[in-house]
Length: 173
Ligand code: FES
Image 1 (cartoon, rainbow, N blue to C red):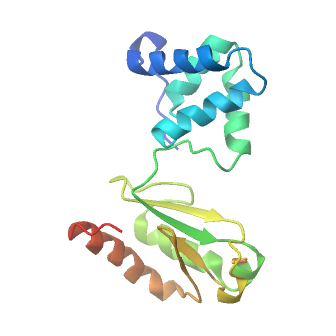
Image 2 (image 1 turned 90 degrees about the horizontal axis):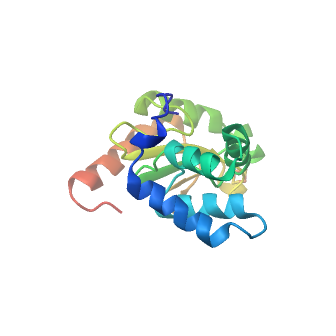
């Protein structure tokens, strides 16, 4: 996660302030409003920018720590911008037992990122997920909505190369 200090409130993009104000307007008196506003932010940006959390904390009086508790409790919320291609390694029991950890380690090493991170060029996001319902194919992964199974660490280089080649050729799916 980006650990840069948060900017002062007055330096935050006014468009983001306006956006947050519109959510406050819509949700201020409704039950569960914090989480609904976080959903709105994520739907709009693909993740919840730290500046948005800061604005929300200021406007609602909910401490940043509480907002981060909510954001990190739900798997759904992302704290960093998504990558263009999503690589999900299943780490459910069957996949774990069949070597999901080795797939993950190989991907982390080749991409130079950790579980939950996105490459600097924002091309590939790597994450682990719980059982995806294809235990017979363990160890399994989902790459851009396509399920792959019975994988070996030696398959990871080709998988990454395939994504990069499709990207270069303009066929990015
Ligand atoms: S544990 Fe991986 S698909 Fe079920």
